View 1: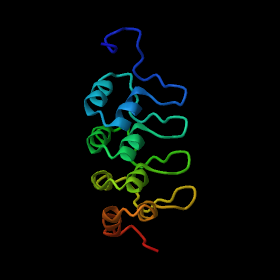
View 2 (view 1 turned 180 degrees about the horizontal axis):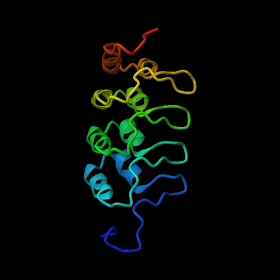
View 3 (view 1 turned 30 degrees about the horizontal axis):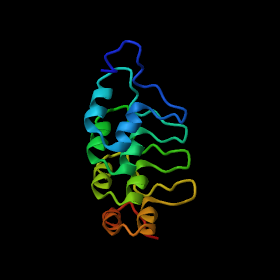
View 4 (view 1 turned 90 degrees about the vertical axis):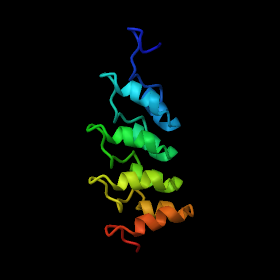
Length: 147
Protein backbone atom coordinates (compact mmCIF):
# COMPACT_ATOMS: atom_id res chain seq x y z
CA UNK A 1 0.00 0.00 0.00
CA UNK A 2 2.77 2.42 0.91
CA UNK A 3 4.70 1.72 -2.27
CA UNK A 4 1.57 2.52 -4.25
CA UNK A 5 1.64 6.11 -3.03
CA UNK A 6 3.43 8.44 -5.38
CA UNK A 7 5.25 10.41 -2.66
CA UNK A 8 7.00 7.46 -0.97
CA UNK A 9 10.74 7.03 -1.55
CA UNK A 10 11.42 3.29 -1.10
CA UNK A 11 15.17 3.95 -0.77
CA UNK A 12 15.07 6.77 1.79
CA UNK A 13 17.48 6.11 4.67
CA UNK A 14 16.77 6.79 8.32
CA UNK A 15 19.13 8.78 10.58
CA UNK A 16 21.52 5.82 10.66
CA UNK A 17 21.57 5.51 6.89
CA UNK A 18 19.52 2.31 6.93
CA UNK A 19 17.01 1.86 4.14
CA UNK A 20 13.80 -0.18 4.02
CA UNK A 21 15.77 -2.83 2.08
CA UNK A 22 18.37 -2.96 4.86
CA UNK A 23 15.64 -3.64 7.41
CA UNK A 24 14.01 -6.29 5.22
CA UNK A 25 17.41 -7.97 4.77
CA UNK A 26 18.22 -7.77 8.48
CA UNK A 27 14.96 -9.47 9.42
CA UNK A 28 15.02 -11.99 6.56
CA UNK A 29 11.86 -10.77 4.82
CA UNK A 30 12.40 -12.22 1.34
CA UNK A 31 9.05 -11.13 -0.05
CA UNK A 32 9.54 -7.52 1.07
CA UNK A 33 13.10 -7.51 -0.29
CA UNK A 34 11.84 -8.70 -3.69
CA UNK A 35 9.06 -6.10 -3.65
CA UNK A 36 11.49 -3.27 -2.89
CA UNK A 37 14.02 -4.45 -5.47
CA UNK A 38 11.30 -4.54 -8.10
CA UNK A 39 11.18 -0.76 -7.74
CA UNK A 40 13.77 0.89 -9.95
CA UNK A 41 14.65 3.46 -7.28
CA UNK A 42 16.15 1.04 -4.73
CA UNK A 43 19.93 0.67 -4.55
CA UNK A 44 20.61 -2.95 -3.47
CA UNK A 45 24.18 -2.12 -2.36
CA UNK A 46 23.56 1.15 -0.48
CA UNK A 47 25.67 1.34 2.70
CA UNK A 48 24.43 2.78 5.98
CA UNK A 49 26.45 5.18 8.15
CA UNK A 50 28.71 2.29 9.25
CA UNK A 51 29.22 0.88 5.79
CA UNK A 52 26.76 -2.00 6.24
CA UNK A 53 24.89 -2.89 3.05
CA UNK A 54 21.69 -4.92 2.80
CA UNK A 55 23.93 -7.95 2.08
CA UNK A 56 25.83 -7.29 5.31
CA UNK A 57 22.58 -7.29 7.28
CA UNK A 58 21.31 -10.47 5.60
CA UNK A 59 24.65 -12.25 6.17
CA UNK A 60 24.77 -11.15 9.82
CA UNK A 61 21.23 -12.43 10.37
CA UNK A 62 21.86 -15.71 8.57
CA UNK A 63 19.11 -15.09 6.04
CA UNK A 64 20.23 -17.29 3.17
CA UNK A 65 17.19 -16.54 1.00
CA UNK A 66 17.74 -12.78 1.14
CA UNK A 67 21.48 -13.27 0.54
CA UNK A 68 20.66 -15.20 -2.65
CA UNK A 69 18.20 -12.51 -3.78
CA UNK A 70 20.78 -9.77 -3.27
CA UNK A 71 23.58 -11.73 -4.92
CA UNK A 72 21.33 -12.05 -7.94
CA UNK A 73 21.76 -8.33 -8.52
CA UNK A 74 24.87 -7.33 -10.43
CA UNK A 75 25.09 -4.04 -8.50
CA UNK A 76 25.81 -5.93 -5.26
CA UNK A 77 29.47 -6.36 -4.31
CA UNK A 78 29.61 -9.65 -2.36
CA UNK A 79 32.97 -8.77 -0.77
CA UNK A 80 32.29 -5.11 0.12
CA UNK A 81 33.65 -4.34 3.57
CA UNK A 82 32.00 -2.08 6.13
CA UNK A 83 33.83 0.82 7.79
CA UNK A 84 35.98 -1.50 9.92
CA UNK A 85 36.74 -3.86 7.08
CA UNK A 86 34.23 -6.60 7.87
CA UNK A 87 32.92 -8.16 4.66
CA UNK A 88 29.63 -10.12 4.58
CA UNK A 89 31.55 -13.44 4.77
CA UNK A 90 33.12 -12.45 8.08
CA UNK A 91 29.72 -11.40 9.44
CA UNK A 92 28.18 -14.74 8.45
CA UNK A 93 31.18 -16.60 9.92
CA UNK A 94 30.85 -14.67 13.18
CA UNK A 95 27.24 -15.76 13.48
CA UNK A 96 27.91 -19.37 12.50
CA UNK A 97 25.60 -19.20 9.48
CA UNK A 98 26.94 -22.14 7.49
CA UNK A 99 24.42 -21.86 4.64
CA UNK A 100 25.21 -18.19 4.09
CA UNK A 101 28.95 -18.90 4.26
CA UNK A 102 28.55 -21.57 1.56
CA UNK A 103 26.49 -19.26 -0.67
CA UNK A 104 29.00 -16.42 -0.31
CA UNK A 105 31.94 -18.72 -0.99
CA UNK A 106 30.20 -19.72 -4.20
CA UNK A 107 30.79 -16.20 -5.48
CA UNK A 108 33.97 -15.84 -7.50
CA UNK A 109 34.71 -12.38 -6.10
CA UNK A 110 34.93 -13.46 -2.46
CA UNK A 111 38.28 -13.54 -0.68
CA UNK A 112 37.78 -16.03 2.21
CA UNK A 113 41.01 -14.88 3.88
CA UNK A 114 40.36 -11.12 3.68
CA UNK A 115 41.40 -9.35 6.91
CA UNK A 116 39.40 -6.56 8.50
CA UNK A 117 41.05 -3.36 9.76
CA UNK A 118 42.12 -5.16 12.95
CA UNK A 119 43.68 -8.05 11.04
CA UNK A 120 40.89 -10.52 11.81
CA UNK A 121 39.81 -12.89 9.05
CA UNK A 122 36.56 -14.88 8.65
CA UNK A 123 38.30 -17.93 10.15
CA UNK A 124 39.18 -16.02 13.32
CA UNK A 125 35.60 -14.72 13.53
CA UNK A 126 34.30 -18.27 13.42
CA UNK A 127 36.85 -19.72 15.86
CA UNK A 128 36.36 -16.90 18.35
CA UNK A 129 32.70 -17.83 18.60
CA UNK A 130 33.07 -21.60 18.49
CA UNK A 131 31.42 -21.96 15.07
CA UNK A 132 32.81 -25.40 14.31
CA UNK A 133 30.82 -25.93 11.12
CA UNK A 134 32.00 -22.65 9.62
CA UNK A 135 35.58 -23.38 10.68
CA UNK A 136 35.43 -26.70 8.81
CA UNK A 137 34.01 -25.02 5.71
CA UNK A 138 36.70 -22.33 5.71
CA UNK A 139 39.55 -24.76 6.39
CA UNK A 140 38.37 -26.73 3.37
CA UNK A 141 39.28 -23.77 1.17
CA UNK A 142 42.72 -23.61 -0.39
CA UNK A 143 42.82 -19.82 -0.08
CA UNK A 144 42.41 -19.86 3.71
CA UNK A 145 45.65 -19.81 5.69
CA UNK A 146 45.02 -21.42 9.09
CA UNK A 147 48.11 -19.69 10.48
